[in-house]
Image 1 (cartoon, rainbow, N blue to C red):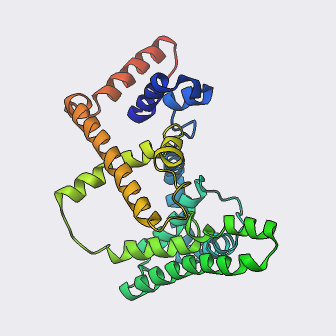
Image 2 (image 1 turned 180 degrees about the vertical axis):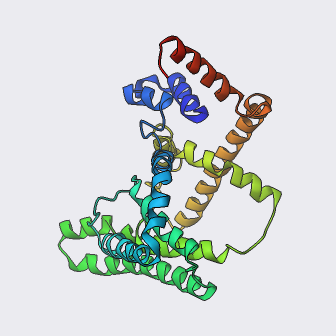
Length: 283
């Protein structure tokens, strides 16, 4: 709510013509209006979780394993390797959470966590598949008609850009497994981690994203330049640190207000709603 309302009020001052009815709804109802896909999908996943978890437990080890094989085959291989096949998935779908939960819960409940060697193999194979897809498209495109080549080039990074794609799943699960048993503590890393969600909220906000990636840090004029990779790295670092500084201000503000008595605002709002419902005769 801090960022949905804050960015809305900022844009209201900076560029009120760019705002719409959807922007107003997103400011006050960010989860219900899908202002950001990740929080909305995660909230939907949490609503289903109390029913999903006992349901998977009731399946037992054998049927849960079959379900994992189905998830891997359908959404990992068919939808996760072949372009143009979504099978009801999208980059903004709760289905990705459900599929991954089925896999992760099986590994945790039945002791099927990959070994370190398997994790390395998953990481390497996922990266190889992603790179191979780009190279294959680059080699095939000159041999095809211009129209077909243009469409193919527009999809050359499909294997590495969506969270349900098999290469992405292999790399993410492999990395997670490799760091699972490690213990590391650093104040700077912890501070950056505490700001990471804010970086996502700010940089992926519908009103901010075009200003950053189509404006200040656009690749349109530098894509063919030899220093495009350093430019991209510096752009990402600048946006990340800038958003962290914004969140540092939010953390300082919250420490003086909401965090002084955690949950007090919610408890007060709940008591008010309870009194109102009591007067209306609603249990």
